[in-house]
Amino acid sequence: MDARSPAPLILIVDDDNGLSRLIEESLHRHGYATATAASGKAAIAWLNQHHADLLLLDLQLRDMSGRDLISRLAESQRLMPFVISSSQGDERVAVEMMKRGALDYLVKDQDFLEFVPVMAERALRQIEREHKL
Image 1 (cartoon, rainbow, N blue to C red):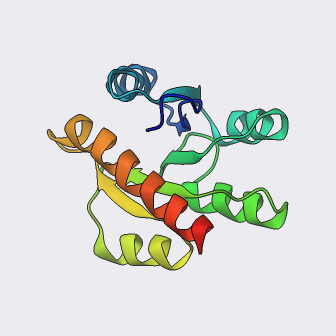
Image 2: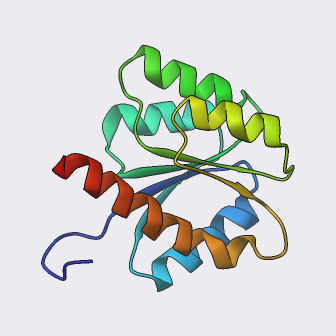
């Protein structure tokens, strides 16, 4: 990360507030800025007012699925690079979300918080490479 540029902003969309705080702390320790939304509707409202460099999206939210949120963002031409997180490691779902544009699929297991900053760095590097092309 270039010291002169602002920290990349990652929007965390997860209805587990405790986990969201832990994700934020992990990302902050690695130099990322974060914002959180506890529902799909809250994420849409936030994105109508702000921009994030990356979306970390829980597949199952209380008010809508991650799939539905991605569809709504795509319809409104507000879709941004995103990574899916889920408590279930379902290969079919992972493949489906990758086909819909997900940069990665993280399973919320005991090592999840360790992998979040690694995933963020990898995803943001991929985004940067694609912009250069």
